[in-house]
Every structure is written in structure tokens, then in C-alpha cells.
Length: 203
Image 1 (cartoon, rainbow, N blue to C red):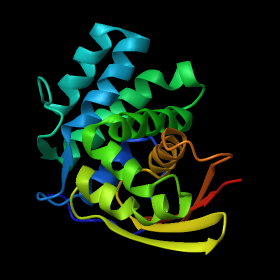
Image 2 (tube, helix red, strand yellow):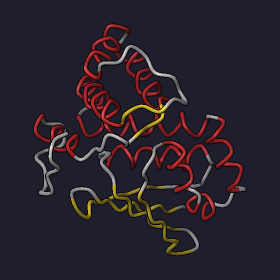
Image 3 (cartoon, rainbow, N blue to C red):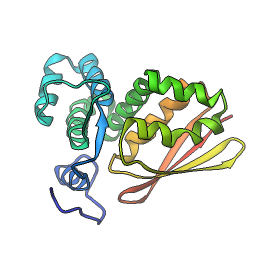
Image 4 (cartoon, rainbow, N blue to C red):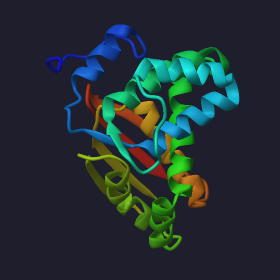
């Protein structure tokens, strides 16, 4: 495994930045196949079967099972290959990254595990935010996340992660929409190369 690099990487989406991100992943970092399949479904819908085949070749897998755990680096490789493929369609690599996160969030919260978390929130956005660590641990191992409720209609999440910030932001926006949180808006900013802050507000 490559030695982790702690300095700020180059521009998101470059080969150098991808190599840096992969260097941060340990062999026991795992992720549910549900997210791989959600991503491949989006590629298939927008770009066709040949594009799916090309993206799979990049990560070295033939297929994924939704609730089987796969090495996290396979998802990162698939994510970057897919975002590059769809950059022109969405206008930029960054926007493609956000859209992929959004689709992944919708798929997770439509799954049996995700529906339980939505049900546990009982329509309360504050409870929904408080349950996010549980949801993320269900989806991916070794989650390092802190949630702080900052007001009656707001909360802040600070997450240590190797996932691109815009991907996570899209996923959180999808969560709010699936849970029917009125007027929900997610904004984010980097705190360090591997720590990001997400602010969630609602009406």
C-alpha cells in the first residue's frame, strides 16, 4: 500500500489526486456493494452498457452484490472512472461527483437498512441527523463522524474521510429529500485534506 500523503492534493479528479486518495485507504476499509451498483446503474442509464463495462475494468471486478462488503479502493477507482466519463454530461468532474453521491444516497435510504433509519427518525430532522453515524457505519466500515445540533433547524457534521467532499454532500442532500425534510439544504467546506464540515439546514 502507498504511504499516505498529508499535504493538500492537486485538483480533484487528476491522476495525482486519485493516487493520493487511494494511498489513504487501509486494506480493512470496506464499503457495501449497494453503492457500487447504484453508481453503475447511473452510468448505464446515462452512458450505456459499454461505459459500464469500461468502468468495471478499471476496478477489476465483474459485478457487485448489494450487501456484500468490498475493499473501499474498488469504489474509489469506480467512482473516479465514472465521474470522468460523465463530466461532460454534468458540466464538470465536480458536479458529476456530487450527482453520484446523490444517487448513492437515494439508493441507500431506499434499501431495507436505510428505511429503518428513516423510520427511526419519526419525521424529526434533528433525530435524522443524530442517526447519521449509525447509517454510515451500516454502509461503510471505520466511520469517523461527529454530529452537533446547532439550532432548532440546523446541524453540523464533521467527518474524517477519504471520500471526496462533494460525493458526501450529495449523499446527505439525498438523505434529507428521501426523509422529506422540508427546505433542506446541505453545504460543505474542507477543514483539512481529510476532514470536512457539512452544515444541514431546513425550514
